[in-house]
Image (cartoon, rainbow, N blue to C red):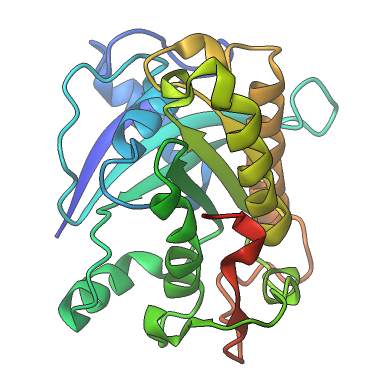
Amino acid sequence: MCAVAMHARTEGNKFPRGDIFPQNTQTLTSNMASLDRVKVLVLGDSGVGKSSLVHLLCQNQVLGNPSWTVGCSVDVRIHDYKEGTPEEKTFYIELWDVGGSVGSASSLKSTRAVFYNSVNGIILVHDLTNKKSSQNLYRWSLEALNRDSSPTGVIVSNGDYDREQFAENPVPLLLIGTKFDQIPESKRSEVLTRTAFLSEDFLAEEINLDCTNPRYLAAGTSNAVKLSRFFDKVIEKRYFTRDPSPMAAFTDRKRFNFKSLHYD
C-alpha cells in the first residue's frame, strides 16, 4: 500500500511558503495541478535516513521523529528547471520513498515492483557509517531497473565491474550518503575515498550530508547545485528528449564484483 503525503516545498515566489497545508489549500492544489511532474524513486536499506532526506528536500526542515516506511510514502518538491534562464519552467518532483527491506522474499519484491513503474529518476541512499548499505545499492538499482528480474541475479565474481551496465541506463541516478556528521574526522578521508568508487560505478554525482542539518543543502552550496543539476537532468530526459520513455530495463544480467568499493 502506498501512502501519498501531499507535501510541497517551494523554490521561488510562485507558490506559498510555510505550513504543509496553507489556508488556501484549494489554490495550492490548483497551482500544483497545472504543473508537469516527474517521478523520482528514493531507494536504499532501512535505517539509512531516506525519510529524513525526503522531508529535508521537500520541507527544508529536519524530520523530528523518523519512523519506518511501510510500502511507500510520496512527497513533493517544487523545482524550477533551468532557473534564471529564458527556458526556466516550474515542475514538481514526486519523491517516492520506498520501504527499505532487502529480504529475498518474492512477496517483498513483487510488492515494491508496483512503485517502479514510469520512473524518471532514482536517488540511491546509503549510510556512510554502514558499508553494507553502500554495497546493497547495487541490488536496489538492479531491482528497480530490472523490474522482471530478481536482485539475486547480481553475481559476485572476481572479474571486473562492468560500468556499461549503467552507461546503458536511460534513467538519471544520484548518489546520496547520509550521517556524514557521524564519521570521525580522522576517518572521513578514508570513507569518502571508498564511496567515491560508487559514484564512478553508477556514473552519478554524489552528495554527502547530515539530514539533521539543512545547511548541507543551502542555496549556493555545491550540494544544492548537484541536486538542482540532477532534477534538471531528470526533467530534460522526460520532457525534452526524443525518447522520453522511462525505465527501459537492462536486457542482460551483468557480472559484478564489489572490489571497487574497497571493502575489508
